[in-house]
Length: 162
Image 1: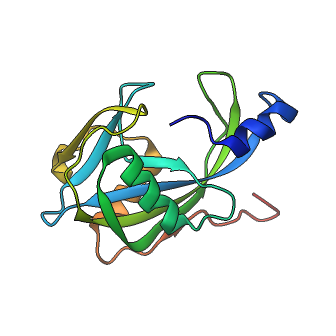
Image 2 (image 1 turned 90 degrees about the vertical axis):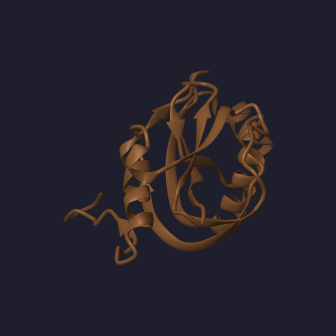
């Protein structure tokens, strides 16, 4: 998908400077608890479905939208997994981003996974023990999603600040 219009408008003012953006991470499970992953077109690495939330969009609605856009699958959001501020990242075009991510567990409601946009080159189901390496924040979301007793994760504030 192209860069959201609101980000394009902001970037026209601030250039590549750091921009805080809200994002969502969707851990999509099927009825056998297999995990749906996408192989990203930019890095060719496997990942959970992720994306930028639109202004005013609720994280659950954003997760449903992103999963449908990237995989063609309709999902139901079941629960919160994690809320996390990520380290500064730099996009291939030089844009600097401070992501605040909300991870949610989703269950497939309908559809067969397929590549349905230009953000990925492959979509596949994985047994949990066969999931390729994921970035630490995504691996944490997956572990919480697979543990029915796990509580949502968030970083505790250090004394005096961050």
